[in-house]
Length: 298
Ligand code: NCD
Image 1 (cartoon, rainbow, N blue to C red):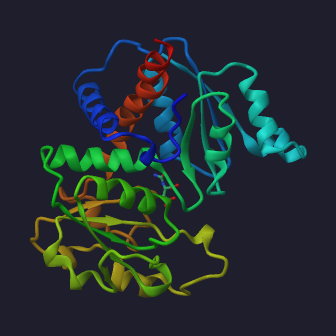
Image 2: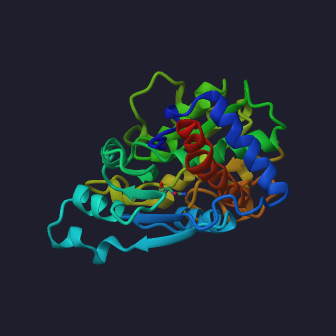
């Protein structure tokens, strides 16, 4: 049974198959490859893009989606998460998509080997489909030439599961990463580190901006995010006429992460990422629910 807890569970061959499938699906929608399959979503944290993107992806492939609202579920009545999950699996869904604030929840549920588990964001540990759609966006924009691409990740890196997954995935593709953050947002890392974007702006092809993960800060880190924005917001002044592409997993804090002007600038790939997310998730669902199953059953 193939799960997706993070992308290190995928071989390079499987990742290339996802990129290729996503590219084909974007060109022309496929027939309903997952007709009448049932997926369940279990989101213990807020989500706009990821949950709806999975739902659109599933529906584009002919699958049905059942959402469980954990704020109204029996985990609130004292049932363990494992028991809730086992009960849902007793209804024979074809896959469960889960988001949780704990880093190890998707892996714990995957280890039960009841149904393919897809991690839609866990703590600050991993968000594999976001990393795959980020890679796809780069791969598409740079015509498949991602090796040697210079990407600066800027913002609250230590608390970001997107950054964690991007770093692990991008390294496998020879993408050169640098991290730009104030000290409280910088993880322990052997990657090149900078305190200001200006220091590196002439040496990057792409800036991946991140939101300050306020909900994960035990106590407020900055009183004043306008002051923070002076050093970390991606603005017209900063980019000037440089051909640096700008990405962000969303939700964007306007004029703190990225300025209004840059969000409307052709160098912003933010909405391309969202668009690509659907095709990448379609490709992931196909891989997990169709291709890998055929592999194990034959
Ligand atoms: C992120 C998340 O929730 O991990 N958003 C997303 O899924 N696209 C990032 C964030 O919340 O800042």
